[in-house]
Image 1: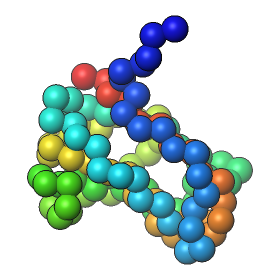
Image 2: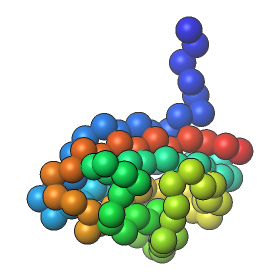
Image 3: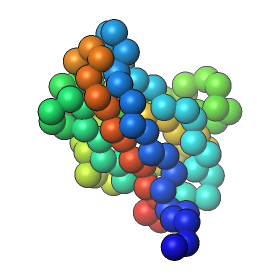
Image 4: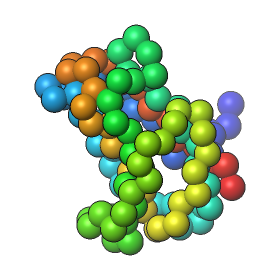
Length: 101
């Protein structure tokens, strides 16, 4: 079976003791939109998800706050990363980010 090139990131981990997770930076310079799905614990998550934006994969230059699972978002920067904060400590966390255009 061929490898899926539309999947940019998949994570299967646990939230830290404060209920937080931050993905690595993803280069989206060739992509205009992404779709994400995530779950935390027993549901879609109880924390505050956001998509952080960066020009250099080091400094955050902005964010798209109050994002929703199963929704598409334009990516107005070269790099993005997903961040969940204030979720349930040590909860199982799963995330998939897919390029859609």
